[in-house]
Structures are given as structure tokens and as C-alpha cells.
Amino acid sequence: MRVLSVAFSAMPVGTAFAGGAEQILSILEAGLVQRGHESVVIASHGSRVAGELIETPGMQASSENYKEAIHSALQQYSVDVIHFHGLGFHDYVPECDTPMLATLHLPINYYPAPIFNGARPPGLVMNCVSRTQARSNPASRSLPVIPNGVSTGRFMAGEPDGSLMWLGRICPEKGVHLALQVAHRLKRRLTVAGPVYPYPSHQEYFEKCVKPLLDAERTYVGPLDLHQKALMLSRAECLLVPSLVAETSSLVAMEALSSGTPVVAFRAGALPEVLEDGVTGFIVDSVEQMAEAVSRVGTLSRTHCRKEAVRRFDAGRMIDDYLEIYRRITN
Image (tube, rainbow, N blue to C red; front, side, top):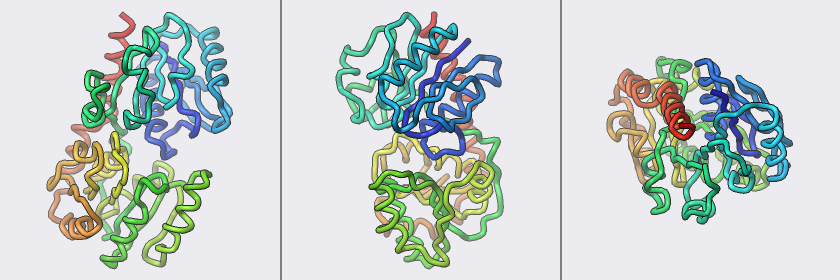
């Protein structure tokens, strides 16, 4: 089978990048190649893929750029399935007979309502990435759900060093400043890791809300590669996820659990679906509750966290699920 994957234009594809959709596309297409299938990916320059890459101009890419890239790919390759991962896929869906799948990585209300009420192109199927996301809107409740997965084999359990960790894109909705407030309240070491993308609102947030809370014990280490991420997660006592938006999934929580590291997270979107409260972490509703929960993470089994991550979140299961839906829409 040959799959043409179409990424979101804003960020490169690869496991080293912070965007959840880009990481899922990377894990999925690499898994397809490993299983003997063929992969073609339309994505921003700087992307790293296992199959063939057709580059776009990144953040400057328009719908027309994507239409041209898709047309070129369909002319050059015999494609069995087109798989869209970007937010604006509805603007560049081609008129063709090739079966198409669009994975909805973001909250349902980010997508235009007409694509849910019969206005989407014929031959296009959509799927959600969590049950919580699917149930969030009447328009999406009948869509198939394929939960996200991570490469659990690339993470390792380690001996915690007493530090806390925050990991992800540094932007207001991810609540980095709240994790720092927790660390100051508890007088605990905290490592903040992840990129600050060149959006004015993100850079202003870092300068005004994050940087003033950094010091010798609360440090920012920038983006991490996969090896660095795995090592730091394995040593953290827990991962803090004080998200302020309805998360459709949480790859960072899955990665932490794959490292045997419990997670303390806000009750935001699908986070209670990812975590088992009191078993693999704690679900809380405020900074005060997060600080209190951190003091209890030592009661949780790191061995069990790792075991549950492998059972529930291994990428192999996700790849199986996507192959099944590919076969269903092509038959």
C-alpha cells in the first residue's frame, strides 16, 4: 500500500518536533515503511520522514501550494490512500477517486461546521484521536476513534532525582507559568523543556510570563531531541501538565508514563482519559491541588506506569488501527 500523508503547514514533521500532529504523522509513516508499505509525505521544509518527502514553504505555504503539491504527488505516484493531518485540509482536498482520511488532531470547534454536516467531499472519511474529543461535539460523536500512540520502546524507566518537569510547546494555553508557580510554591527543582516558536504571542508570553519565574532551580533548557527527552523524563519525579485548553490527547503524558514517570495534570479535555487518577498520576483542578498532588506521587508505582503505557499507548497498536481503516476505505 502507498499512503500519501499531508501535514499541517506550520511545523516540520519529525519525532524531535513538539507538535502532536507532526509527531503522530512521523511515527505512523515510519511504522508503515517498517512494515513494507510505501510512504510519501507533503510537509514543511526541514521535515524528516522515512519515505519520500515533498517539501512545502512551511509557514508561508498556502492552500494553492498544497493543491499543487497533492496534484504533483498524484501524478508522480500511484497512491492508495491520502491521509490529511492538517487543520486546513478542507481547503485543499483534491477532486479524485483516491480514498481519503482526515485525522482531527485539534478540538472539534477548530474545524468548519460544514465538513460535519454533509458538505465534505465524497470519499473523505474523518477520525478523532480520543473518545473525549469525539464526544465533545454532536457533529463528531459518530466518527471512528483511533487513540494516539508513542514509541514506548524508545523510552526507559530510570531512578528519579527529585526534579519536576514540564515539556511541550511554550505558549499561553499550555500553562508553563503555572508549572513554575507550583515549583516555587514547593521549593522544588523544575526543568522546562520545549521550543518557543516565532509567533509574537508565544515570544511575548515567554518573555513576560515564563522568564521572570526562571532561576537557578527552575531552568529552561530549550528543545530536546528524542534521546535527551527520554533521559530527562526517566529522571523526573513527575511531569506537570497544567494545560488550559481541552486537550484532544497528550503525547507528553504518554511519553512520561512510558518512562515510568507519573503525571500530574489539569482536568482538561482528554487528560483524564490518558491518566488513571491515583494510579498513573493525579487529575487536579488548580495550582493548589497540583502542588498537593506532587507530594503524593511517591506513592505511585513507576513500574506500573511503564507497564500501562506499553499496554495502552504503544505505537504498534495505533499503526494497526490506521492500517485497518485504510483497508476499510479502500475496499
